[in-house]
Amino acid sequence: MQSVLKIILIAILFLSVKTTSAVTDSVTLNSANITGLVTLNRTTTYLMKGYNNVLSGGKLVIPEGTVIKGDFETKGTLIIQRGGIIYANGTKDNPIIFTSERPAGLRATGDWGGIIILGRSAINTSTGLDSAEIEGFGPGLGPIYGGQPVINDDSSGVFRYVRLEFPGVNLTGISGNEINGLTMGGVGSRTVIEYVMVSYCGDDAFEWFGGNVNCKYLIAYKTLDDDWDCDNGYRGRVQFGLSVRDKDIADISSSNGFEIDNNNNSPSNTNGPRTRPIFSNMTVVGPFETTSTTVNPLFQRGGHLRRNMQACIYNSLIMGWRTGIRFDGSGVCNDANDGTVQLRDNIFSGNLTLADQTGGTVIPDPVSYINTWNTSYTNNTDVQLTSPFNIYPDPASSSVNHWMPVGGSPALSGAGFANPNLAGFETVSFRGAFGTNNWSLVWSQFNPINYNLPVPSDFNVTVIPEAFLNISTGQLNSADTIRVKLRQNFAPFNVVDSAKAVINQVTFTGTFIFNNAPSGTYYLQVIHRNSLETWSKSGGESFTQGGVNNFNFTTAGSQAFGSNQVLRLGKHCMWSGDVDQDGIIDINDASITDNDIFNFTTGYVRSDVNGDDIVDLADVSTVDNNSSFFLAVIRP
Image 1 (cartoon, helix red, strand yellow):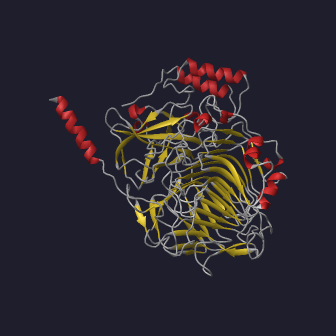
Image 2 (cartoon, rainbow, N blue to C red):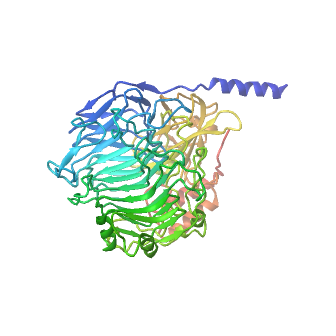
Image 3 (spheres, rainbow, N blue to C red):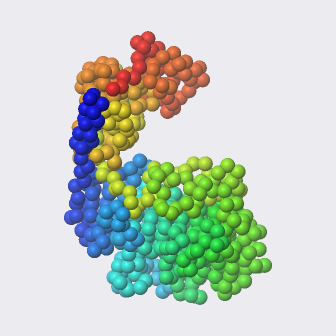
């Protein structure tokens, strides 16, 4: 009978946990022209309608974790015009998401417009002018990018830890007026663009039109057209990029990995600045798992180099394409022969044809050229990546390691950075996007069609690590990072969501963003690098999804489960001294601290119990004192 009652109780508790949606704002980004400061709210979901322009002097701030849905009917698009600023600074745990307005399971390529960032760095055009209309809007309608005056160190802001899902739609219905996932026109060198993922884009994933912005940690997933498209004098540095193709999704214009041009005034397109990007550590996975794989015939090349561009590609993997590289035009071929165009220290694998040429001659021939400077394999399996073609259906796990090299992979070594063209790049030993560190984890999403969108919810938690509290100042010796886990308030107290934040030095409060927890009642489990893990009081705390929630551990000892806190300066604090984080403050913690004192250890280390960046007698004194109380974690 007791078992039956327990089951009924648990069922009731589950039923009481209701999922609520965040407040939806369909006004702020409804064909807006932003001329001042506009700051979005991360606990609000935004529906972006029509063309939204951040004009010169305007600034759009998008907090970490914000979700913005592009409207299908009005082709929602965001345009950062010259002189405008976007500050979209997501984090690994809380990326900013631009996505389809459609529900899970129905999202599709080209559900909304895209993101366009325009700057004043130098470009070249087929007309010779130093500025031009960005493509996609039709003649006379596009916003302007480029000089007047030229500012090569121009800044359009920060675009970091951002996902763009299902962008890339034809804006006018006329062929050629498609826009890309992320379009960059004349973007200057002080703009920060890194950790950006474009998935299921209806045109190119990333396209650079002139400018000299540098980019790192980019992902293009199941693009319709090209993954990495460069035109009109782009000359920035791009390092660490992954692109992955679906064998059935290709564009009528033919789909490539790299498509690099100068401008379209062929063959008179040697005007400058010449398109000369430098790519390193790119993994460009095509559709051919094997040479017998049935593939959309519109797929073409891992790299199409044409129209007098002067790009260089180093330390990269180009695998599974109909043709690995095409050298197109006498200018490109001649520049490859004299060393202006370089492909060095790359790995080519599983390409039906390694390289070819048209309109010119690479000496002695394209295949020999590639084999002289690079490594080539007949089969993709020879590269020994984990499972690079395992994308049917889309990977559902949040930890996707498909493109990581396994032990013994030739991709783990062989990179070269002595070339002067690679000045300013991060020096690594591996070729391709990944070595032993998977930088795509947590913030990326390889199943955008079916996943449930996060509903960012703030939880303001006030908590003090005992030894951090300075007796003289009444403040913390330093702000510090704490992780809070939301756990079910019934056995076995499973983790529902997790977040980390920095506790303010003066207010002792951090704002934790929970993306996935539905409304309900939870225990807060607080974890700090050298404090005793602390749980919130018996019964759990109410949490509202999409709202702002608050809990203060410091007001009473009983705010912690089992009153497992210590009173210091009238504030109730977490016990300090669990240096090895085993749930007990004991002699092992004292031993670690003693050892670090002997070694004159400084900096951000676990044995710095009071947070002053020095391991000294004050730290070991706290550990010794608290170990005498036989302190341990108290959990439900």
